[in-house]
Image 1 (tube, rainbow, N blue to C red):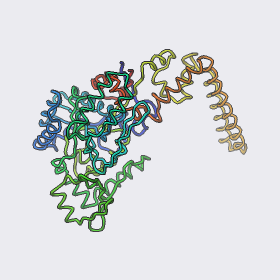
Image 2 (cartoon, rainbow, N blue to C red):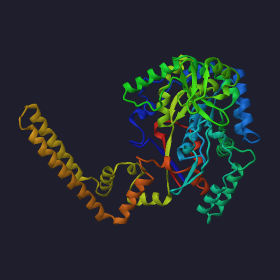
Image 3 (cartoon, rainbow, N blue to C red):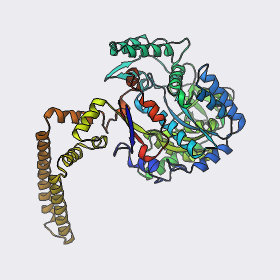
Length: 531
């Protein structure tokens, strides 16, 4: 096992995200963008807006959810939350059967690493990682499956409310499916049985099972896990819910901020609505819409007037569940968070919240892009070493990869250089005709395009022919297969491979290496993990 880090590969994330989160080039759309945020300013704002009573309440809830378990580090962190010099670094995710794709693990590790970094920089303070479980989401199709080795198990269940309350005792088919995949690996079968004990414990739900497993995985690093669907926490957010329900200010702010994103050619991922709350009970999670002088629950058609809605809000705030735009505001109303670790889509919808935060005078955390990674099997790593290729090479497009490989073999890709000279020369030739306003420009450009297209095709064919002469067809095919799978930019491994695959195989020694990193910077933004 070996872990090294580098900056994000080109095209793995957009230039917008790279500039804002990693390169210190602010978009001007959010008060604290990326790793170059004014951390002292964020810390002071959170410190001034989160009191001792609220800290104690949060600590009590975390203790209750932690149950009888918890490592010494986790218990210490719960107690630290009561202190005014303790702050949270938060990341979150929908709770997924089997924890979900690898990027979920990278998000959690990112929160831990940022805490390491901040704790080193501000030794008189405590920075604590917290995983926010999005237990209230109700899109079952997004979380009801497990992928292993290109095969998928789907748990078919008719469920209309928050997925956190899905009971997990009836998953025998899942465990049998996993056992077939690992029937010749005794250690894996033991791990399956251990997971089965977690998920099939009495009264266990997807929320409590996920919390227990994640807590155990990251126990040594003091990670805390929160299910935010708690009446006491929702009560802290009544002011937010009231504004969303009974005036149009938040809708106006979300809409105005989305227009600012559009002005910078950023497509806002979340749709702003006049009401950004759902109604949630034991049987359903339905979007609330404003209708005349009252409200309607969109799916059932149930209507409530303003008086009835306000009464429910006062007596049962847990009936209200924030959507993707309101959730960041809810988070900051209940947590002393100085940073949120976001994935690429999350990062953009957090950019939509700036004016809404200001409207409600809520503290804005620093917005930081998560770290990413790729797991490289040892057999592939050995093959790359034999060919003189690096992981960085493998993230190139196919044309650039071929050029790089020829340069490694010959010291220089002379043919590609000559091709580039031809292209540059023709471009200069056409520019002169343009400057002269020559009537021959149109015909010259047509002939040049046809010539360059044929020349490029010939050059590419010659490069491919040279590589085929140097390597057997099977070797070259294996390089292309690696690039399309492990090093794919269009469909990243971290979004396809489930952590469960590596967990059951006992290939998780790298987890400690990730979480022990002390620097959160652009040069360590992407992990290369050899197993």
